[in-house]
Length: 127
Image (tube, rainbow, N blue to C red):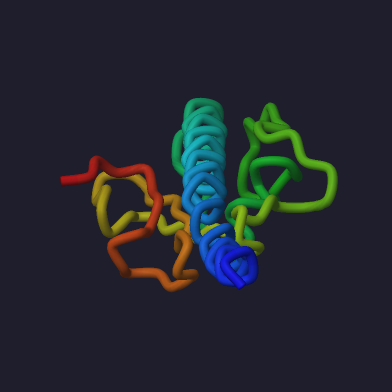
């Protein structure tokens, strides 16, 4: 009986104990991807005089856009299109940015998969 109760308790606790490290690893991966996107976007600006814009702005990092005569990309190495965040959602790019009004925002919605919440992961300083 005691073994059965311990088994039930462990079955309930194990997913909760492993969720923390997995979530932290995904958050670290999203932060690293935001840094890579930011570096690629800055390199695009150095070559072209402005940040990428338009509907397919992030695609400009690996595919020559029509409005970038000094493009020296690819600025981002991709195999299957624009990478998604660790939760399988698209990164959001905004130029001009909301958090960085003089430049751009690049962000993941984070674990809750909703933009505009406290767990968003982006290229701006956290308070």
